[in-house]
Image (tube, rainbow, N blue to C red; front, side, top):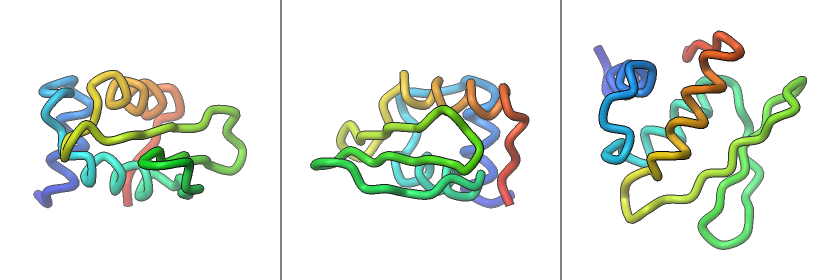
Length: 84
């Protein structure tokens, strides 16, 4: 199992949201079909064609913010998203 697949599993299981690597979260969002539109500063705005929601990510050091990991998990469940 690759690093990204392990991180994806951790997100789905809700384990260690506060310690997930920010780059892993961004890669998962990208592999789920979202496109990056750079925001201001360190903000990253991700969108997907046909979705009303956007994902606004900002790192907390080298890790992802726990509430943003939960938002990504909720979208994964809501839309049954997969990573390729």
